[in-house]
Image (cartoon, rainbow, N blue to C red; front, side, top):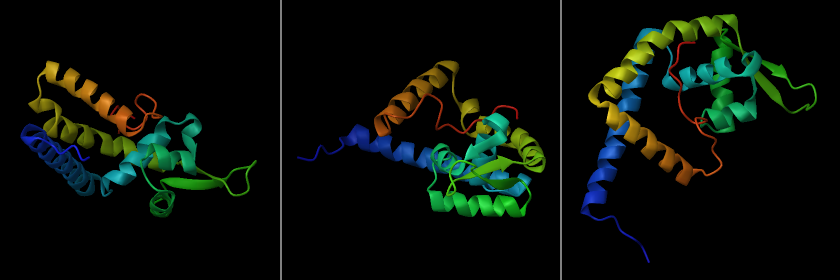
Length: 163
């Protein structure tokens, strides 16, 4: 039997969907305008910047960037064209590849980060009280765990720390 959403749940669900879509669109517009890259590329660069040696196996990068293998491969190809990422063969798995963040890619990320952080602040944190930020953190943790119980804490967030 279907457990339909009640009126309050329906209203909240629609607000959640609208809010997340508007934030994602704002972040994408800002990064395209100021850094010439879509948000998807920024996420890939962030993930690589945090990896040991700025290197990550492509399959793991796809998971951490919340992307399919084929989408990630296409994005990495575009990042390679810009000189921001390079691929290297995995020495112990002939089919495996690593994505490596180049110095140029790290510089592009470092240049893009301040504007990105300002947009994250403008669209989310500046409109919330400190208690609401803590509540949102708890809510997001619960939702992430329900959607994917195997996700480690912090694994699926887009980091906006200083690169």
